[in-house]
Structures are given as structure tokens and as C-alpha cells.
Length: 263
Length: 259
Image (cartoon, rainbow over all chains, first blue to last red; front, side):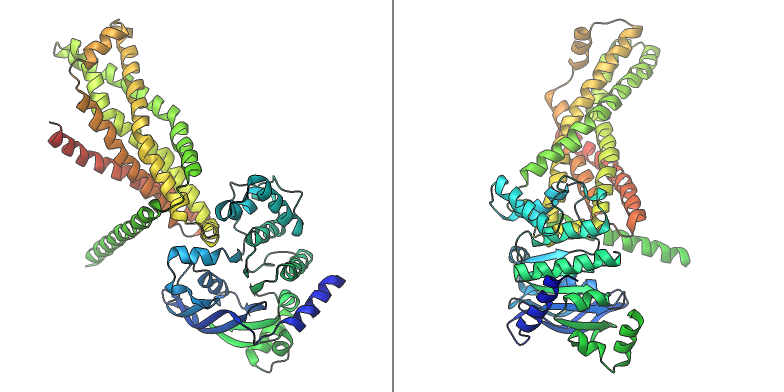
């Protein structure tokens, strides 16, 4: 980790006030797929400007949680409030207005495979802003520069590696200057060096854009790097939440097992 | 007992499928009447579905016209009605063969394409990404394709009709030489505008069926690449089946309203 990133971590750990204004509030969230209960009463609050990392084993409903927050799916019970609004009560137009304030990085980036890198990042700008073409392109270049992809404007997603696709996905997620960033397994399937680069990038962007973030991962190194606070999920419930150090030192059997296995 | 249970499950699944299709159609209809109208994407789909199907429907129309001329000639000659050949070709093509051939060719080419494309987008979360970007996928992906199918099918039917009649004349004139103008004059002498209009416009219904069923099958894809294959196949099979069923119903209705 380079010096500026280390400083960024220190800055943020001192600046985030966890009793501050809540950006996302999840209350008693339940979700099942057939007989499989994925979320079983999740309660979480994410404070404005904070990065909450949600840890857990595969299949514990971490990605489902993010999809519920951006309403790509609906909970069976419970409520989700974003910036004080219960999203269940919003109509499609209201929800779409809220979505423009949210950025989502999908686990496999989900780049539009018929569009170039440039067009992928331009997509939200073209849809939701009245920027002239030249300004849009400048903004796209600026975003791609910030994720280190400025030389790949005209490549198709199929020509990119997994790490590069995630960078472009991140640039697309940041295009509309979101207030809330949702990252689904940003380092999954990447080698340790690329994972470290993505983590550093997330930190850097967080600092530059003053974001609230929810990062879903099972990568402890990534969680340690980017998180202000960590919530550990098991069997559809939050087992423990606190700082990374709190969890690492916990006496809870499952938490110990989770941290021991990874290390 | 077991067969009754299987029949019950099949009926339940079919009803569920129709229910889901109804709900899907409602979402598309709602998306269609709200801004923005996606003109750029509609234009792209006109090209994708219309222009790129043109060679195939032209070829299919020509093949049908040729076979019709060759097959009908001997039958008509047998009854001493060889002079009826141009009228038989024109009437058969514009009334039935042109519309149904255009419908089936498009359901094969476009149905498979839409099913596979949307299916692939679904399993790679691209449709979720569109929705997460605050864009309605029912408008951007579905409405544009359905509208293009509805508008383009009658135009492609005209091409099928034209190529069928032309190829019918070529096949006829190779055995019994006849100039094009007398052939057309004989062929169209008993044809009214309503004979031409209703069968051609009924292909808009085929377009609606092909677009809606293929998009529906694509958007509900599950299970990775195997699922994409299943969606492409089911899009073609179901849209072809419903085109044939709709043809039977529409022919009856046309006969009632345009006797």
C-alpha cells in the first residue's frame, strides 16, 4: 500500500462519525428464494460518508442485500430507507431518481458487451444529463483516467481482463457522481496484486468523491483496507458488526473461525 | 394417476406462463407510453430486424413462388385451366403464402436473435446494470424490439409477395413463355385492394407475437449459457407456434370482415 493510501485510511478512520446522519437503514430484512431463506432479519445502518463492508461466506445473501438496496429485487419483509425514504413506497420514476444518486459495481462488472469502454462509461451520462457530446467525452476520459483505463477507450469489454473490467465498471458507477456506492465483490476472482490495486482505487475514489459505500466481500484483506466498519453475516443474520479490529479480536466462535480460516 | 398429475403440472405451468406473459406485456405497455421514446434504439432495431431479414425473406418468397408455379401448372393443366396459373400464383402468395412465410422466416431469424441476445444480457447481469443505471429495460430493450417487429413485418411481407410473384412469373415463362405485363394483368385482374391489405396487415400481429414472446423468453433466462440456448430455442418454437395459431384465427376473422 502506498503512503497516500495509508494516509487516506488514517484520515477516514478519524473523520467518520458513526453516530452521524444515516444514509442507509435496513430494518428486519427478510428474503427467501423458494424454500431457501437467504436473509433472515437483517438490521444495519450505514452513516453518511462511511464505508461499511459486509463480510460473509458464499451464499449468505451478501449480493442479494445490495440488489435489495438498489431495488433490483424486493424483500419479503422489512424496510429499506435510503436518505430517509422508504424505497418500497417509491414509484418507478422516484426510484430511478434515487438510483441516479447510487452507483453499483457488479461482481462480474456487467459491462454492456456491445458497447466500447467509452460508450459503457458514457451510458449513464447520455441517459441522465444534458451534457453536450464533447463535455460527455471529456468527463468519460476523466473518469477512465481516475481508474487507470484512459488508454483503452475504444476496446470492447471482451478484450479486457477481469481487473480491467472492474475498473471500467467502477468508472461507470461513478459517472453520475453518486452519493452512495454499492460494490459487489470488487476483488473476487482477481490476483492479490490486482485486488490490492482495486482496493487502493476504491479508497482513493472514496476520498475524492466523498462517498458513502457498502462493500460486499469475503476478502478479509480487502475489508481491512477499505472498511470503516464491518458487518459479518451468517445464515441470513448479522452475527457481529464493528471495526475490523473488533471483529478480529472477537471471542465469538463463528467470527474466530471466519477470520482464522482466511488468515 | 401419475399421468393425471403430469397433465395437471403442465396445465399449471402453462397458465403460469400466460400469467407472466400478461404481466410482462403490461410492463411493456406502461413503458411504451412514457418518455423518453428511445428513437435512436428504435431506428437501430428497424435496421437489425428489418434490413437484415430482407435477403432471407426475399429468397424464401422467390422459392415459394417458383415451387407454386411448378406445382400448380401440372394440376391446372390436368383440369384444363392452365390460363388460371398467374391468378393462382398471385392470389395464393398475397393471401396466404407471403404473410405466413414472412412471419415464420422472421420468427426463426429474429426470434432466435432476440432470445439469445436478451438471454445473454440477463445471465451476465447487463439487464440489471441497465436498471441500476435508472433506465427502464422494458422500454430500452423490449418496447423498441416489439415495435420494430410490428412495423417491419408488413414491409417484409411486401418484399416476400413481390419476390414470390416475380419468381412465379420466371418459372412460368420458362415453360410457357409469357411477358411480365400480361402475366401481372392476368394475375391481378380478380384481386381487390382488400385482398391485399388485410393479409399484409395481419403480419403486424405476427410481429407483435414474435417480438413479445422472444423478448419475454430472453428476459426470463436462467442458468448460464445453457439457459441462453434454451431461451433462443424456445423463442423460435413458441413464436412460430403462436404465429401459425394466430394465422388460423386471423384468416377466419378476415373472411368474416372482408368476405
